[in-house]
Amino acid sequence: MTPILVRSHILGADFRMTAALDALDRKILAELTRNARIPVAELARKVGLSKTPVALRIRHLEEIGLITGYRAILSPLKLGLTHVTYVEVSMSDTREAALQHFNAAVRAIPEIEECYMIAGGFDYLVKVRSRNMADFRRIMAEKISSLPHISNTSSYVAMEAVVEQTFTFG
Image (cartoon, rainbow, N blue to C red; front, side):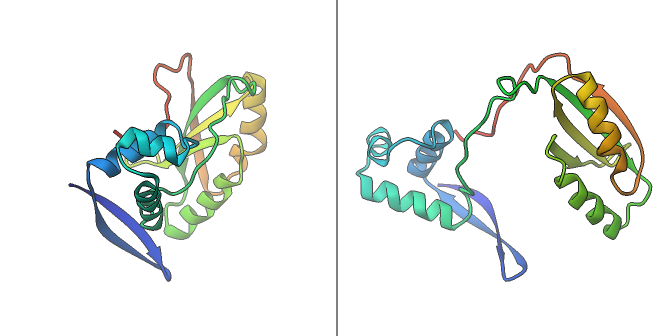
């Protein structure tokens, strides 16, 4: 069995626990990350169990928080969102209240696909998806530049996605 660290948030407190995953759990997770819409009967056939034990294992993986949800993965290219820009953000205030204020505001901008707090020469790295350079300039001027506690930004336009994938298991 492979131990996996699982974080659980119960009654306002974070708890860490280790979930022991056996080979069957790993196979189930690998199949679900490839196709979350796979019927339980087909999944059971692929992992070598009957439907009921597979359904119970899936429910357990959901209950311990290892599976956090199921969603459709949209194609940004088919939606016309072909322009990717990474923005380095430096903050004028890095006290906890300022960071929380920034975090809440950045979550409200739908064009921001990802945002990471960074340890290094700047404070946040933001991935912005837009239709083109003019659209990015509008997002930058109207939304990103007005985020709280920003002192400066630097932008880097992606020319090509060499690897772009969602997290998979197995």
